[in-house]
Image 1 (tube, rainbow, N blue to C red):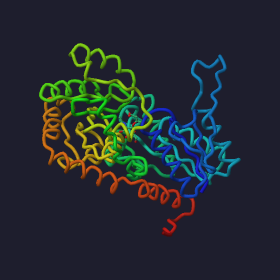
Image 2: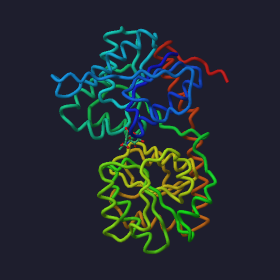
Image 3: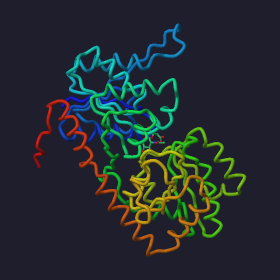
Image 4: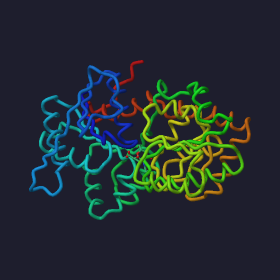
Length: 379
Ligand code: GMT
């Protein structure tokens, strides 16, 4: 099939999933056209059947705000026509589902639209009265809608009163990239005295409650030698740095910023800490699990569908600093328990969220829309 993919190419989990999906689809023989404002950052190597079409936004000085949505719709329509696309798969509802609908109006009904909801496009923007009706409209006008967890489906229906069927298609991890790596030497540099290494990976937005990561770490470090690695950056980075300074922890915390080779980073840590207030899926939890790392996280959104309580990690209430610290200590103090959780994390990541399984689910959706039925799988 000829598939157009639109996402936010440079930030966040939705861009990562859209890009990884595009690569997988290309490997499976489809022709993929990324229609985005920038080159997707995870694209990596050259694929002869992946094309990139840059959305250029008109910045004429009459416009107070550059009309990204319209430029995107126009580029989608142009690519759909010239490349004879079968469908557009848009990631993140706002404004992508609306732009895709506009493009379809320009091109004709044969162009199908698949919209994948990722989280904050519903759980944050869905509360904004200036957007909520438009989001519901975009969902209704899509030919097929998916969401990355059951919780996100439930929230979308509840919050926006959506009647349309929304299919659950979980995010995935590529086990050719995410597997436990031997990082002994680097670990020795970061934790020369055998300290335990806790890792947190996020975009440091308020919704991640990154100050809680430091507070949990303070309690853990009070009872065992430990280091904290903070990966990623965002609006709260400075505030977290100040908090670490004020708490006298700065020597044991490394602010590593954005990192490319996340599989190596997860591999050198002992566990991942995820303290979010909202998290429709928690892709970083899945990536850490695929590298054999248990996860201590907040019980929010779709996280319980990824992290299995008492098997691959522990789930605590939002803001339960004491509870999270206790569970971190419990896991890191028991070799037997830790080894079991680590093995189960790997197993769950590979079996429930493996890339072939999820790519096939998307293909089945595409086939249903384009051919009217699911093609038998030829293995
Ligand atoms: O909030 C983020 O971390 C970015 C956001 C995005 O759209 O890129 O992430 C959302 O989508 C990810 C991929 O499906 C999910 O793993 C994240 O849980 C989700 N974030 C939230 O719901 C806060």
